[in-house]
Length: 329
Image (tube, rainbow, N blue to C red; front, top):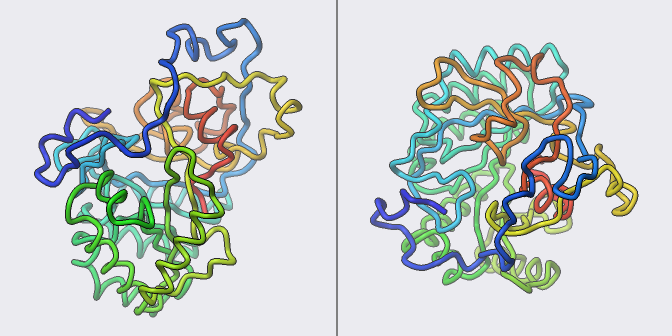
């Protein structure tokens, strides 16, 4: 998955404990944006409204996880740092479109030197702001600034901490040695500081969601972390992704078969800005999960990205449609 992983001294030594157990994806699947390998019309999703705009701050991260879908690491700058000026340009465009929420993701957002200025710009414009972070050293360098933002803007700023499992052994098998204690320290600091916080976790193969939520709740209680476990959005448990493993393609008939609709899918209400290395300016892509595929590059402005998105990637099926997941709050 991640060929830069070995370059990090804290990288996990073995395979991901969350690996998808499936046959290899047949080459003919997800090859045509209009039809499936069987010749059926492929489902697509329109942009109903831009409720959430994601800003990818860059792929550099202090960790090199075993199965990072975007292959973030201390050396991977395939997505370069988003500049404050570029972020502000998209924030202004989003403000004119009635966008509610700005999400910051990476990589690790707090490694971007302009992150605090970008958070201030989003909050000052009245957006709700969600930051995805591992709550480790890069975030802790900004304690004073974050406390100031919390004092000024309250719960309009939410930090969602990646805690891959409720057990240290599994978390570190995915994220590497010495990653658990630092993440827990950061999560406790956020809780003690009165921040609006959430946690993103994962399920092991065969692990049920209800038992996992029980174990997470016990962990948070034991650690004195104030997290409202009655609010499902405060602990999101994401389905696994592996673009190399087989999964069903989504046809137009699947909406009725599955009892779902395009309005349930993330790209119905969100887009993401990325700045690819070697490209002169940021681009808008369909979603947070597929930043590198040219088939999901929708243009240089949010207006250009107001179009239908064919569900022509395994992540569309496994994470969004069949998994029923969304990265937004």
